[in-house]
Length: 630
Image 1: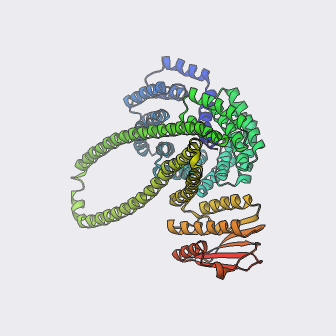
Image 2: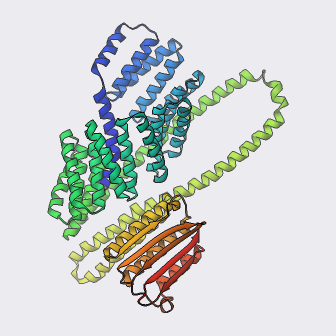
Image 3: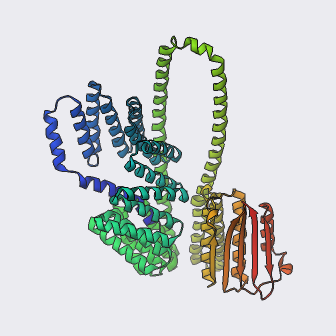
């Protein structure tokens, strides 16, 4: 269901720009232009130039840059610092809209220096928040959060609640992108509360939708639907069709994830209708592909073929490479189900080609951005060095005696500070290096190894058509590759550092239990203490813990013949306890204790210094407990 997940962010961006353009008052622009014709070369003209630039930014940002550059030159001529700062601030925003992030940062830093001179906290908070947005777009999330928090602190000092609400929402988005859903929800709820207090009804719906997205990613579908329907009701009242399209699509996701395909299709077709009314080709192509994928899941392959064909044609027409990639992948799945392995293979090759093309484009963009940042940083360092040199020359005579008197104390303090920073930077660098290595390994396994194994599976099916004499061997190859894909999925999940939190561990355990037990019609309950969510496990402990759980669950499904099972996770006095109970036929623990499965579970428990208890008798079900320190 990747289509709608992509649609979430895209429609927010398009919706903001669309509403901004629609809200422009042409009379206001004409009025400003008329005033400009007779305006004197003073501060009022600076404001008029910047105001016209702001009104035109979503139509032609290049014109906006030209107007604010004129405003900057006039403000400098009049030595009006506030006008200079405002002009730099606008130039930063206009370059941000164009994706010229290094230029945006250059203008914003000049604005910050002037806000400090003017002691203008409101202006500084605005600029700091926009710098955070630049780093967020560059995926430098630590810097983005740092600037947002600094801006938030200033906004709270001056009591600017509108600015506070906006910054809180931005921080929530950063943590969402990083996969830290607990922190993301915390900031989203703070933003929601602030917007409700201020009566910002036109902005409340977007926050409700963001909260719904988080719950959807956590597979908490009832809560996700609750927030989506609340957001939908508000957007329908305001007639915000762009947002309505997005929310309808997300509601369709939830029903699709719950295998309620009639409802999922109903919301998908409602999304398609609005997208067609708006002539939004990207959204139309996205929704057509999603409808096709829903029909595949229902084995309605002729309907799926029709919608996927329309989706791929439109995606190709608008050159949406991300949609082309996904549509080819869905076609490969479609023809695999039809047993047409030749076509499945052909579409799989096209999927790989589109995916690799996207990866290459991203690498080029990243390299270009790195080069631009390098030039900007180099220039900034040179400017800073020159300023420091001039200040040192100006102050040397005044502070000479004081510096001599305090030389020893200052030198010692500097040494201690430098030692601290060297140690701290070394520690942080090592931590980031390890995290980056884990991210890279997880990504490579998922993209490269996963694709290769999937290719082996497809190739084996194609080969079976061509070589009937070796069908059994090829069947074994296909089965083996699919088993390895499943194992690799666990490895990728284990390595990825964002899954170190217990919240993500619980989510994956719940999904696994639901899929395995539902397939065998085993009724089950899954309960976990909320105080587990913030805990973290090391990579090795998390791996051993999850694999013990998975082995126990597989044994239950394969051998127990149970009709009911319960799974509980508790945290009491620093001890985490996993309990799995079933009403199955049971087994003699003494006779089966030498089996590989139970032996592996015991070895893993020893590695993580945990206590493993298995109690069972024939005809009395099985109880398993795993206890270890958090």
